[in-house]
Image (tube, rainbow, N blue to C red; front, side, top):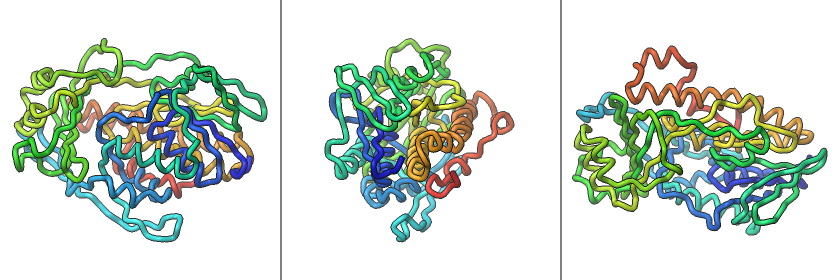
Length: 396
């Protein structure tokens, strides 16, 4: 299949689906994105872009645009949950990297951006190339395929036929269930609360440095600044035996979060108590066992649809972004979808499995369930190597 005449159907207009669309458009593919929501909107939360994601977006020509909406921390620190003592410091790193245009981009080891700002940037980029590419109010229900095409059917009665289909529809993926049968995600024994707090409402000088991760006993807390430092985004985690709420973004009373984290250092409690009530949510952390393969015929999976993972390595979005770059590269350089998908899985399945399982071990280590030595011995990931992965230049 030549890139100049290939038509790819993308189910899901989240970060992964939109990044894939942009990457495929750069390679000459026509893309059609089908989103179940009636309007394009992302939840008000923070998003961390590690070096692997930043390399990907530099490759797509979006480095400068993202820097304009992102916050680059002065440095990050790991702190004690109860005392606030700084245990370890991480410095942000900038280094010049040649992009596909032959110029040097400043690549950051980490940038943090409001998810809604990032989503808007990607939507606008897709529509800049093709203003008709995104179709709203399309809930995927089924597909049929033959040796030449794949057709997606939607709950509103519409259908669309293309050369390939990619399910980017998240942890509750309908495409995944269609391809591999129904398997319910399992609760992985952590509940998370998140909030967005105006920096000006906090005690002056208390939130330092820009990024902080607090380790406790069966609890942890992560916070970082967004929008030129005017907002503080936080996620607070606690270990639980069960989760009975319906949905991954349930409104939570601020008093509930305060009660849960009342034993924390003042920096944490000051942030929580100043959370605007409408900006406080909770959800149970869910996951699935890694799939040994992601593809059936002309349809495959990407991001959380293929490999949902816990957030403790900060790589949920990063893995989807890596998937998008690798998939676009192999499809543009393969003789047909069978070869392309085979190369995609060869490059991605084991790496995604490693990071998925690594994020579970990191959850236990960060929240004090197992000690550092046990966590390292129990898995085979290296956090520095995970974020240093270069999806643009890795051999595929």
